[in-house]
Image (cartoon, rainbow, N blue to C red):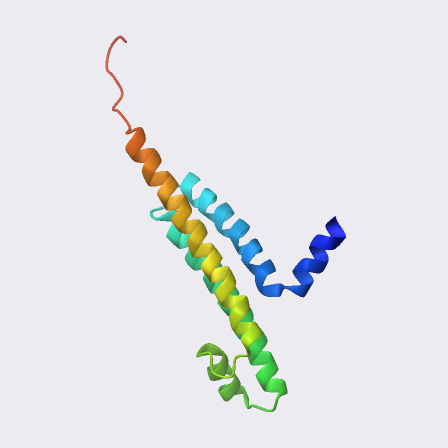
Length: 127
């Protein structure tokens, strides 16, 4: 079973990135919630999206340099999506979408929980 999962992830890198981004976003959001960060879901999704953008942009810049582009052209091409291959684009868009879906789900769950059980101020004195 583990071999099948690894084979699937290797054969479908965009899907494996999306699955990994889901776990990363949920984990980072949980940590930020515990730290009482403002808008932890959005920050987590933005951080995960930025990570995958940088990962794919770095790989694309490397590929462009090896294709004969000079360093400045390769950097600008990677930064502004110029010359990106479809797999690079998919491997950034898929985890970004997954991260924002997870952030949206966490936000909805937290907002519904807050409406369902509003915090009451502590009572003073006896029961």
